[in-house]
Structures are given as structure tokens and as C-alpha cells.
Length: 337
Ligand SMILES: Nc1nc2c(ncn2[C@@H]2O[C@H](COP(=O)(O)OP(=O)(O)O)[C@@H](O)[C@H]2O)c(=O)[nH]1
Ligand SMILES: [Mg+2]
Image (cartoon, rainbow, N blue to C red; front, side, top):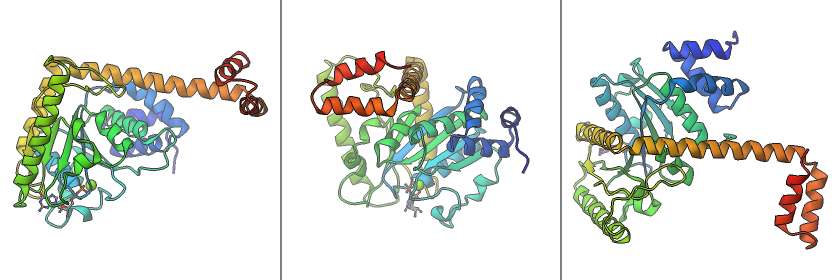
């Protein structure tokens, strides 16, 4: 196979070439040396896509929901990029979605691009790699980029928190408790979805979620004297945000409730834009990305410049209580080449 230069790949991607897009994502996922040049060249073309994160326990119907949501968005002439970070159920292949679901409707559509990502093995961490892939899809011109993750690990939660709108999916019949509460991810939701609303137990789940939201709201109101406060944490997500979190009931396998979900996303998007929160979040996220990248490089530079023996000697001095950790850091900083 002929090797394409990063420049060619980038111009092909920007021109809408799907093969170039697929190859770019692979390069970014594998963190190849070329991917650095590619990401640099793509950055000026990013910042336009609206990103939606979808998380929740396995089996709640996230992949089905992403599919129906994407179909709905396509009907409204929006192009959609999908990133599925779910080791338990590969998105492509269609098997997960069952026969009733026509995955081909999406995969034959030039306005949709689906990419599954393994959740292991990335050097810079899954959250960063996924974020870079989001940027690639953004630069490729998709209007909406949807990221599905299993709401299990901290990594996965970090990923969806980076999205503009975060949806937490719940479903009746997955045990006695609300799965999202167990996983501790309820508080990151901008929109709550109770999927599998065709299940007769759905109202129990909705009631339980409402009770949780009321409780959370009261506590936050008391804690902050009822003032509207939007603070951002390190990932840029607002910690206190008194906007009502809507609960939308859906049946992902037949599309029921999906137009309402799309409306809720649209209304959250308008809220973020009007309140200036979206801009604040993006600023905070870029700031934290900058700090993380700086830390990595500075640390690497320092460690590269200090011989291994010196480092070993310092550790031995610490162990022997001849030097304290603060002085050790000062010593290493002073002795770097
Ligand atoms: N009855 C019913 N089943 C659903 C619904 N949505 C998804 N499912 C089924 O739930 C299972 C898990 O769906 P999937 O989308 O893979 O869940 P994920 O693990 O959250 O991505 C599949 O067998 C789907 O057919 C729904 O609204 N109603
Ligand atoms: Mg899935």
C-alpha cells in the first residue's frame, strides 16, 4: 500500500474522504508519529461539531438509542459521527442491535460515520485518545458527534463529561436499584433517559429518578443559598447548575420518545449557548488540556535529563532519611541538564 503523507491525508479528510477519515482515526488511536502532525493541522478546523455523550449501565439500550437518535438527526439533515467506547458490545457488526434494527440504514449513509474504540492500550490514556478522535470527526465536518461509553469506570465518565450534552441512560428491569446511582454517574447528567419504556416497570424507574433529582436539587439549593452558581471542575463541567434535568422516556428499538430526546438536546444546547456555559466549559477544558500536556512534557524532559543512578541515589537517601522529599525535588530540579 502506498504511504500517504500526513498533508495528503489531512486534505483528503477535509474534502470528505471517508477512507482518509478512517485512516486518520487509526493513526490517532495508535498515537503514531504522523498523528501529531495530523492533529496539529486539523485543529484550526475543529470547534464546530456539537458533542453528545451517552453513558449508562450495560444493557440499558445505549447503542440502540444512539442508532435511532442518529437516524432522527439524519432525517433533519444533520450529519453524525459516532464513537462507541464499549468493550462489551462492538457497535459495528449489527449483531448487538438485533434483526429488527436496520443498522445498514446508517452504515450505507455518507452522512454517518461510526467508529468503535477499544478501551485498552492507549499510551496517553483513553480519555485523551477519545477526545482526539472527537476532534478528528469534528474537523471532518460532522454536525453532531455522539460518544457512547459504558458508565463503569472513571475513564468512561471523564469521556462523556467532555461532551457538550451528557445523557445518562437508565432502564427498568436491570435489578432493584437504579444503575446510574450505583455507578455514581447521575450527577453528570444534563438529560436523563429512561429507555425500555415498553417495560411495565418504567414508571417505578421514573419515580425513583425524580426522587433522586429532587433530593439533589434541595441539597444543592441549601448549600448555595439558592444562588445560581456555575463552577467548573478540572474537566470543565459545571458542578452547580440548577437547570432542571429532564427525564425522557424512550423505546430505542422503535424510536418512540427519540424526537423528544432530540428536542431536549436542542434545548440544552440553546441553554449552554445563551448562558455562556458552553464557552466557559470549552475554555476550562482547553486550559486543563494545556496543563496536562505541559506536565507530561516537562516531567519527561526532567526525567530524561537525570541519570537513572542519580534517581536511585536520591531514593536511597530518602529511605535512609538523609534527605526529605521536598529537598529531593529541589535537588533534581537544580541538577537537570
Ligand atoms: N424492550 C426493549 N428492549 C430494548 C430497548 N432498547 C434496547 N433494547 C434491547 O436491549 C439490549 C441491549 O441493547 P444495547 O443497545 O446493546 O445496550 P447497551 O449495552 O446499553 O449499548 C438489546 O437486546 C436491545 O435489543 C427498548 O427500548 N425496549
Ligand atoms: Mg453499547
